[in-house]
Length: 181
Image (tube, rainbow, N blue to C red; front, side, top):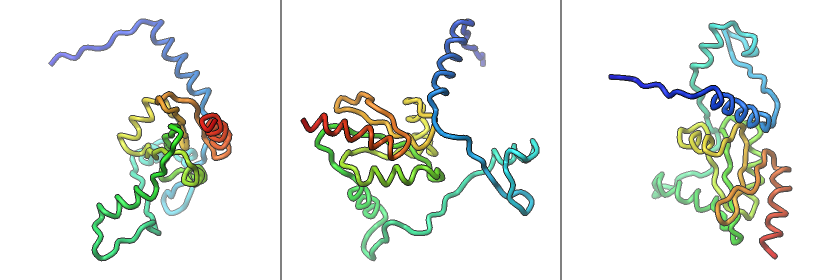
């Protein structure tokens, strides 16, 4: 089997680097201090030795939800329960504006944005970037942080991005007023 390498010239590589630096300059937020248990006590991961940090990178994270948002009745199947939850969360929008909300289950900043969107009249979807499909969609739109909400117009063109409920309010309220006129 012959492996061929993709050859790029120096100009293409420098253009990619410049594009990536520009995208990274748009990332908002602060560095997160991660603490994890190591040999019986909690300590900042950045203070771990190289071997322990590598071990940490191979760990799988599990999320345990203690309070389910919907309980099955005796005659209801799991598929019916999921359908009912989706119908409850689906909000129809008459103005054509919709959103894609990129979130992670372990993100501490995602719940306020999610709560704002649940009370909003704009339709949209929540994309879990911890899944392969979610990560691929985030790559397509060059999403570098969670939470990020991308707002689209009726033609599917991106009109705004927001990272907090306050930013989202500032984006959506004027857009809804324009479409109501």
